Amino acid sequence: MPGDTGVTSITDARSGRRKLPRAVREAQMLEVAEEAFAARGFHATSVDAIAEGAGITKPMVYAYFGSKEGLYLACMERGRRRLFEAVDAAAAEGASPDEQLWRGIVAFFTFVSDQRASWIVLFGEATPHGGPFADEALRLRQQIARLVSQLLGEAATAEGVGPGRLGAIEPLAHALVGAAESLASWWLDHPEESREWVSLRLMNLVWIGFGDLVRGESWTPPA
Image (cartoon, rainbow, N blue to C red; front, side, top):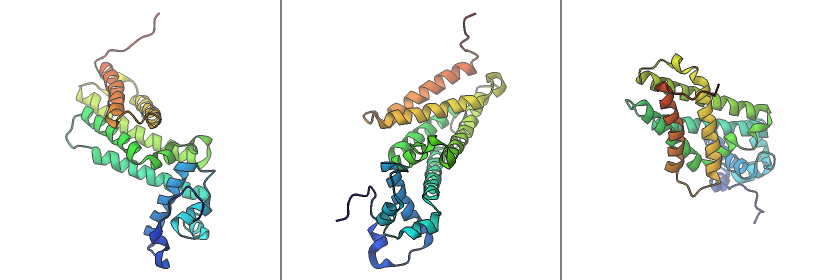
């Protein structure tokens, strides 16, 4: 038996050496690469191990993605797409703004739980160190913040309050995104708590405070 490479072999890719459609082959490589990057990190994962796990040759990985960095970015894009699909699927037409936000939060933590490898690739050890990975992670956070800004703006309008009265909504949205990301990282170290438990904590932190802002209540520093 070969040694443990930290990746999962896809036996179908090995059997018969048949030629698979490009989209199928690419999906197989991404599946193996995502699990490997999540388990071992970008630097400790070799292209050789990924190629072996996918039942292909190393040059084929480079032919599809150009480099190990290109492969990691492709995994990030795959995870980004899955995250937004999950949030979009949770949206309920005609639901109140608070219910929309609640559904989005639950969908977010469901993604973290069910697609853990994707989450780690998106916000794991490779993304804080600059370069294309950090740029891609920043782009994702900005996209999520824009979505949250829209939900908060709709909530304010539903309460009869113009967004201008609250100040800029965008920084509030970024604060929510940061809180969600931090809470998700904490949750992965505390799996005894349920998805509903962490979702409710974040919802109360955001919605109760935001509701006070809508009602014109805010804390002011002492003179």
